[in-house]
Amino acid sequence: MDKVALTAGALYAIVLLRAGGTFAVGWLAGAGARRSKFSGRISSAKFLRAERAIQRWGAPVVAVSFLTVGFQTAANFLAGSMRMPLPRYLPALFVGGAAWALIYATAGIGVLEVLARLFAERTAFGVAAVAALLLAVCGAVLYRRRRTARSARPAPGAVTEES
Image 1 (tube, one colour):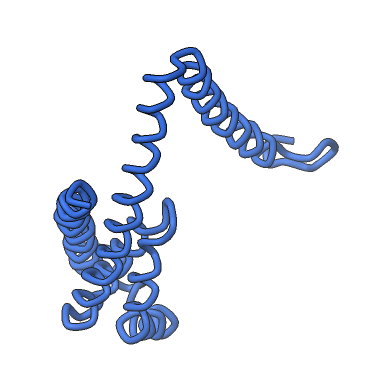
Image 2: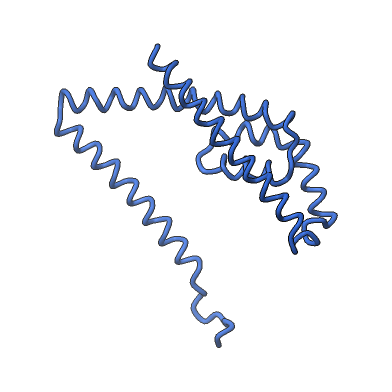
């Protein structure tokens, strides 16, 4: 249990720094955009309504974003750029970050222990498991790239600007 507590503590510190830093970068980017040539676009009524909604209701989204893969950075950046007040953001950061750290600490240690036992007792199976995992990741990346490239191509017979 000490390994889980130590790992969770380290991961918690990391996620607080990373997510808090992303929030700060978003805050600075939002401040810069408000002073740039885009200031007219981001002061529209629709944008201001969205900003108020994020300021008021964004905290639960930030907290839950830590349970997703790939969305938490966007949620923290958006919360910063839309100027979510710190009294609303910080509790979401602390709760969501704690959940993230505990999940990754327990699941991560469990996976590492299974792999260590597999390598110690059956090295060939351990190598095969790692190879299968790497192949699955590479396959998923290739699939997503091909699907994205396919959707970016115009449909056969479609009229394009070059025609």
